Structures are given as structure tokens and as C-alpha cells.
Length: 613
Image (cartoon, rainbow, N blue to C red; front, side, top):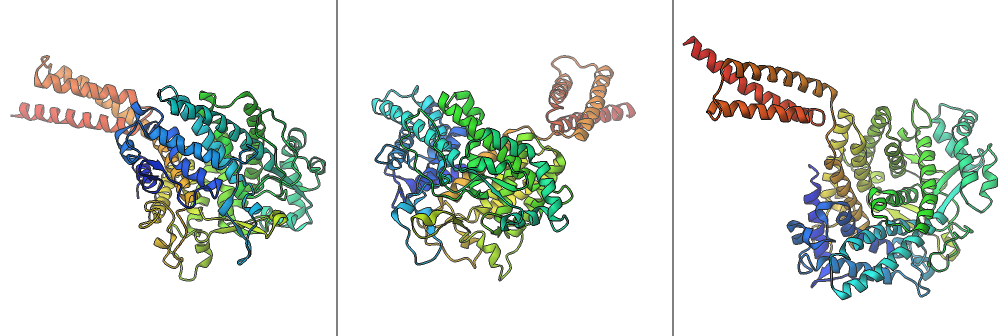
């Protein structure tokens, strides 16, 4: 199924309008307000495309395109749509702000007890989660940019008053989310003989390298990163001292919430008191990927061009950027530890902190590797090997291969998903878990990102085919009836052995698919891959066709305005265009040159026939 980002985004927006807009007003439904993560994901399904794609702009009613207006036509027209969205964002800010005026980031109903039959406490439902921090960064940046344009386009007093309120609320929430991301970052140091150390050594050694050699290689490869963490990152909890001992191993990244005993971050911004954390200082691959996705929005061209960060936020952003780069370098180095056989190529990945094993964790490491490949503009060899991993992950998830009758392991990736025990949550009640069921959507997103990065025609073609296969699988999983029609996620539609879901629409999967469409739009907006072989062929064709055109003009001089004169002039114009685009679009230049050669040959043949007669 070919990915058509514009059409598919319009389909998603139509489904959003049916589900979340009632009688021209925003409706959260019975599940609204129960999780800051779900509410932010729902808003981002609209706000993210509207601020990332020019053709989906909603902040300037004069520029809102007709099909976009019709997709969201329920509010009453293009002039009413911005007000509706901002009212929804304002309601979100109020719902997720505490009595002390501090923004809250509760996981809510996304949290679940590890053991069936147990009930979570109210305080556990209110626990903050990294997903909410990351989503809030993206949502606040999108809204602040939206406000900047819309403020100059409206004269309504109620809207101008709401805009001022939202500027303050978004700025405060953005700062609070950035501070919380800093306090959720952690480094876990452990001995090579510990269970974690043995797991990591086995993972890196691949059964080929002895633990002693793995440890020596690890110390050499990550010495500079260890020094950066020790000297430049404030971590607390005596981690700095433990890092100085180079005989141990370490992991870095984001845990699921605020780290227990994490020091407060000094800031003059009015974000209220900084709560105490409960999470064990152990990185999670899933939450690390989520944090990296949100943090990179702080450095996007849009954020920098519009100047969306104030001076205090810029300082926080630099601190986050350092952690962002360190984390990418660390996990990219771990994924490619052995050049002969990458640990990433040994699917499924085994986590050291939670002692779990799943293809989802391989995908998480691949996602971080994609971040790093994009950052450092990787070599074709690294890209090609990563393409192999993506194709194998699609097979493991039974997306591009048939689901066996008793293949319960693959089915669990999609329904109910991979359950992550949240270490430290037992301090407030029964141990909690977080379930992730967006394997297919994440695989599509990373495949499209890699496709955007690739400049090798073969790798690009393989990635595009894989993306289309994964997208077709995802598109079939849309809900066909009842609440959430046109949204996600009906796993039963693709895997009949999966139980039918009685849950509400998955805003997590729907938001991920929306991100994929934005990424696909970026892919198709770029220039096509330039083939050196095709460029050489195009230049040769242009050389021959230019010469033959000149010969034709000498052989049969055509009077200006005559039929033959217009025909030759048309050929000359086509060749001029072909020469202009040959470096950027050699295939199109070839097509133009070939069409000219064909018509020149027809003219020459007609002349020869006339002379022969």
C-alpha cells in the first residue's frame, strides 16, 4: 500500500473530528482528563501536523486549504477551527495543573498493577511519567508557535485573552517538563560480576569474546563518555564517584519517572515545587527513546527560527542536549560494539536493568541508532546493516511474514504489548507496570526516518518497500465501527487469534501513526536520490540530442512561426530544461532527452524518405 501522507492525514483528521468534536465544541469523552499522556497524544494528532506541514496550517485562516477545512469542518469553518483547538489546549492545561499551580504529568490509566486483582492507589495514578514530559515538550512548542501566528490574525477579544493565558501556561509547562526530564536522566553503574554486568558482557561478547576482553574494550571505547558524564553532568546520588572507577560498567538514559533522591534543578521560572522522585536509577530503553524524541524538538529549525525558548529555557535545553548526545553515542556504541557482528543484529535484545527480552527492545536500540545515524550522517555500510535489522524486526513481529498458529510471542508484541515493571513504584502501593503496544507504528516511524537519511538507491528502495508493507499492516488495524472509528487500534483485524479489545481508541498508536505521516511528508518533500550512473547517462543523452538538434536546424532551416519552426523550438526548450535539472533529477533529464531524440529521429526519417522518393 503506497503511503500518501496528505490523504492519510486528512483521513485521520476526519476520524478525529468524529471522535473529539461534538456540536462545534471539543469533547474529551469519558476518558479525557484521566491521563496527561493520552490527552497530550490526542491534541498532538492535530497540533503536530498543523505546525510541521505548511499545507495543514490552521493558525492563519486565510491560508487554511479547502480539503483541510472540510476534514475538520464540524467546528463551523476555517475561522472557527483555531479557536476550537486553542480552547482544547487551554482546557488541557487547566486539567493537568495542580492546586499549587504546578503543571502535573500523571500517567493515570496508562499505569496498571503488575498483578491482576490488585488496585493502584490514587497517588500511584498521579505519578509522573517520562512519556508525559516528552509529549508536553512537543505540544508546548507546537502551541507556542501556533499562538505567535494566530495572535496577529485575530481581533477577537476572547481569543486574545486566551492567547495570553496560553502563552504563560505553555511556557510554564514547557519549563517544568524540561526540568523533570533532567531529573529523570540517570546513570546506572554496576560491577562486571553482577547479574547486570554478566548480562551486558554476554550481550556485547556475542559468545565470541571472553568477558575480560569485553570489559577492556568497553573501558577503552567509553572512556571519553565516562569522563564527560563525570565532569559535565550533575547526577547526584553519588553516581559521579562510582563513575570514576573505570573497572565497572555503566548504562545511561532515562528511567520511567523522577529518579529517587534526584537533586532539584535551580531555575527562576515559576514552575512551583519540584516533587520527590521514587523511580530506581535504572535506565529503560523505551523511556529513553521517548525522551530523545521530545528533546530533539527543542533544537528543530522551527524552534530556533521562531525563537520559542526564553533564556532560562535555553540553558535547560543545552543541559538536555548534552544528555541527548551522550545517550545516543552510548547506545549507538553498544549496538555496534563488535564490528563483525553487531549486538543489535542478535535479535531479540536483552535488557540488563529489567532482565527482559523482546524484539521491542531491539527496535528501541535501533531507534536510538537511527537518531545517531541522522546526527552524524552515517556511512552507507552502517545504513545497510540497519536496513537488515529493520527487515528482520518486521519478520519477528509477523508484519511481513505469516503468523503461525501458536506464535503467542509475536502476538504479545501487539496485544496486549510488552509489559515493563516500573521499579520503585512499590514505594506508594502495589508494584506497577507500563504496557507498550506500538511496535508496528514505531517500526514504521524509524523505517521512514532511515529512508529519509539514506542516499543509497538500493537501501532507499528496500526501506520504502518495507515502510509500505508496515503501513499497510497498520492501516488494516483501524477501528471500523463504534467509538473511535477510523482511529487505532484493532489488532484483531490483522491477527484473528488476538482477543477483541473493549478499550477506548489508542491515542498512543494513533499519535505515532500521525508522526509517521509527518515523517513521510518530509521524505517526499526532499529531492530524490542522485544516481551518478543515471547522471552520466543523462549527460550523454543530452550531448547527443543537442548535437542532433543543431544538425537538424542546419539541414532544414525552418521559417519562424512555421509548424516545423515551432516543433524545433519546443525541442530546444525541453533540452534547456533537461540541462537545468540534470544534477538534481537525472532521471527526468533522461526522459526529456529521450523524448527529444525520438522526435528528432522521426524528423530525420521523414526527410530521408522524402529524399528517397
